[in-house]
Structure formats: C-alpha cells, structure tokens
Image 1 (cartoon, one colour):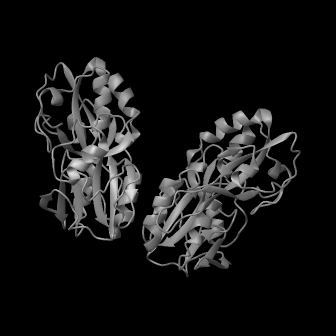
Image 2 (image 1 turned 180 degrees about the horizontal axis):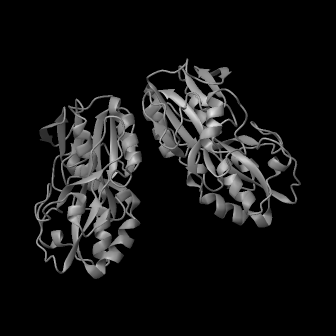
Image 3 (image 1 turned 30 degrees about the vertical axis):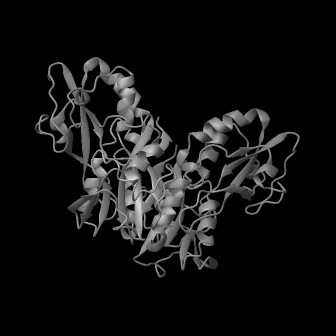
Length: 251
Length: 251
C-alpha cells in the first residue's frame, strides 16, 4: 500500500488500526503537538537529547502539512490522544476540532524503522514472534534538561543472542533518525530496571536469561513522558503504535 | 593564555582586542542574543541550516553562563554590538545594562577553528599572509526558512592551490561545529558572486586566478544577517572577530 492511500483511509476514518508493519520501507514518526509557548524549550530538549528524541520534521505555528509527507497531520494518523495539564483526556480519530493556530508539531523518529533492518539481517525479534508490543522501561538515565522539560530516559528492550549483538549495534547505529544504537547492553539493574519481566509500558516477553542478553535502545516514549511531566495546558500525540506514515523512504 | 584568564581581561575591560589567533586549540563561538519570542524560530532555523549555523550551545531564557565555558556571556567577550529593529545602534564592552530576563543566547561555531587545522596541514591561507580579514560574500544559495527567519547564505572564501583542495575538503569536513566542508568550489558566478575581488564583508585578497581556485565555506555571518532581516526589537551579537573563547578544545 502506498503511504498516501493508507493515510487517506485514516483521514476518511475508514480505518484506525496500528501502523506497525504497514507501508514497509517508509519512515514512520511519533507526533507531539504543543502550544507555541513550549516550542523553543521542547525543540532545545530534542536537540540536547538526539538519541531519545530524533527530530525528523517540525511544523511551525499553525502549520498542518509536514515536509516529509503530503499529509494533514490533524486527520491522517489513525488515532490521537489529547492530554490537558499532563493528564490523559481522550482518544480521538482526528484533531480538527481541537486544533489551534498556535500549535507547533514535532515529528520524532521511531524504532519501527530499525526493527525491519534487524529482521532483514536474520535477527529474530521475540516480541514480534510472541505477538506482543515491545517491552519498555523507565530508567535512571537522566536526559539533559531544557527549560521546563526534564526527566529520565525510557528504553525499549530486545533480548538478543550473544552472537547477534555486534551486528545489531552496527545496524541500528546507522539509523540516526530512529534512535540509533543501543544505550545499554546486559545489566538492567545498572540503569534502574528491577525486573526485566515487568515492563512499565508494552508487554513482557519470555526469554531464557542464560541464552539471551537484554539490549536497550532509547525510546520514543521518552519525549511523550517528558512533555507530560511539564504539564502543558494541552498536548496532542499519536495513540501508541498509531504513527504518521511519511513519504520518506527509511534508512 | 588560559581561556578563563583571557576572558577575565575582557570582563574587567583591560582588553577589547580581536580573539583571532588567541587561546589556540580552544573553540571560539559567535554570539547571538534574542528575546524569547524569537527563540523557537531561530533554533529551528539553525537546525534546518546546520552548515551555516552550527549550534555549539544554547542558553535558555535569562541564563548568562554557557555549558561550554565558565563565563558570563554579558561581560566575557571583548566587544558587543547592539541592534534594534534590524539596525546597528552601538558597539559596547559589556551588555549588563541592556540585559533582559527574556533573552535567549545562541553560541554558533566559527571558522577560526578549522583555519588552524588547515595551516597545521601546510595549507597557506592568503588572508592571514596578507594580514586581512577573510573575504566574505552574499550568495544566491537560499537557506531553509523557519518562521520569520529566511534569506541567502553568506560564505567565506579562501583561494587554494589546486593540489590542496582535496585535503582542505577532508580536513574541514571533520569540523561539523565549525561549518564543515566547502559549499562550493571554483565558480563564483554560479553562486551569485559577481566580483571575487569585491567582497561584501571582510577584505579583498590578492591572488593569481590561473594558479589558485576560490573555495567557499558557509559563514557565521549568515545567522547574523538572517536575524537582522527579521528585524527583532533588540538583538545582541559579538563584534565581528571578537568571539567568545570557550573552555572546549577544538576538533
């Protein structure tokens, strides 16, 4: 399916499914929309924390069409979430009613991109095999503060065979707009994770700890969490797993 | 001389000389201070035009101490310029009186850094030999617009021997926070420069056009020009050639 066709289905509310696995080879992006009052500090936060918050596009005040997709970001994602003062309010199929002329939108890279490259290289991803959302964890790794935006990094975990780790590092490091290489390999305790089978987001996966090593990547939940903790009067994001599919080829 | 000692001389107004050639090996930076109202759009402009505007540090609202120097940016540069509504008002030795709590400061890389590397590699820089300020030119190369910030790139020119060009590209490309590699080699007309001996900024240098090729690098005058054309109510910059000497080693 062509990205434009898929986005039109979302625009017309004919579909509202997860974008995971759709339009292979096209970059998908996390969406965060904030009032302009927060835009400088959040852009600076992303600039200071490029691994957790790789910017792929920014839409200035009131703009609804990104440079990397022939899309209207108010309608062309499958599902959105609205937050007020840091609290989740509701999930909606478009944000036309909520739209304000002072909204600034940030599109941030997502790890769907590098997962395909790992699989293409013959690396098995257990969460996909076990049909689960990738497990994600809060850590004790501090992000660099910018204005009102501060907090710790959220990571996603993939349990790899020892002999796969070097290749996985080499492959994912190439994807600078999709979080790049791992931030930690091997010792969950060291980055503040108490139980590797109890993720804070996503779902737990089963693996043999003698056989596989947990590898952690910076995760796109980080900017969402950081934004919410700044308690902006209003914030819009994609619903988890329901990304913007762009017209940009990956890699 | 240690950067801290040199900066203290400026702070006490014991010196107000150009920083060119001082504190070898330490990164020097262009300074641009703007009211917060412009900060998001200007940061986005820099992010979209990293070659012309390589950000080395950003000081949030009201902050006076950068991360990359144990300095007070209101006093520790040799000389400043104040602009109002895009017009030059005056040159001053410090900006303590002018300081406002809503000021955001951008530190941007400068080509002093890579010039030293070129010389260390045996490449002769004519403007230094002829004791002149490097010639700079307006071009027809458009920068990527961001909000109120838009305009063409300003470039600096160094006339090199043919056999030096490859090495100069390889060396300067490494300096990503100092404008990186050349933006154009060889044909001034193609980038909108009519007379290579009549620069728009800096001074003309003499060279034999049969023997040497003009090579052009993105220049730190670009962000200053772009800022002025947005006509902010107030803007502060370093005086040309009178940079912030940071505590960060170059390269």
